[in-house]
Structure formats: C-alpha cells, structure tokens
Amino acid sequence: MGLFKKLGRQAEQFKQDMQSAAKETTDQDGKTYYCKRCEETFAGPSEQCPECNSTDIEIVT
Ligand SMILES: [Zn+2]
Image (cartoon, rainbow, N blue to C red; front, side, top):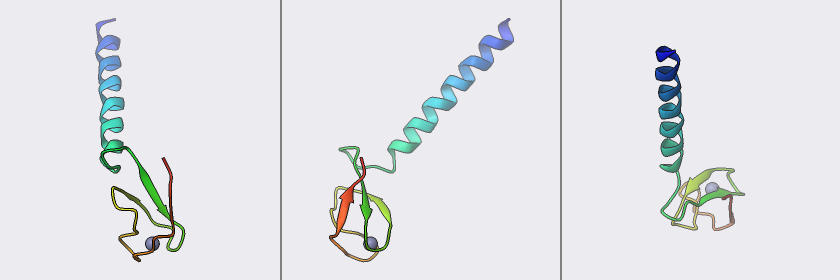
C-alpha cells in the first residue's frame, strides 16, 4: 500500500508542475493573446503581436 501512496504523491506533484509550467506562458494577469493576422499566441502585457506587430489581436484567456 505504501508504494501506491508514494506514486499518488508523485502524480500529484507532476500535475502541479504542469500547472505552474503552463502559467509561465502567460503574463501577470494570466492572459494569453491570439494574433488574428499570423495566428500566433503570446503572453501579455503587450497588446501587440511580437511577431508581426499587428494590433488585431484578441484575448484568449
Ligand atoms: Zn501576429
């Protein structure tokens, strides 16, 4: 039984790592932006696409 508990904790830790890794792609407000022109997604706080400098973007999250 002890082994299952250990594996369960590792799985939980892995999940938390995935969540924190996902947060790194967003800005302080947790927003992700999508550029309609070049279909690039990027993190703020800029509301201008870093790839093509288009301001025709929308907030994904
Ligand atoms: Zn773009």
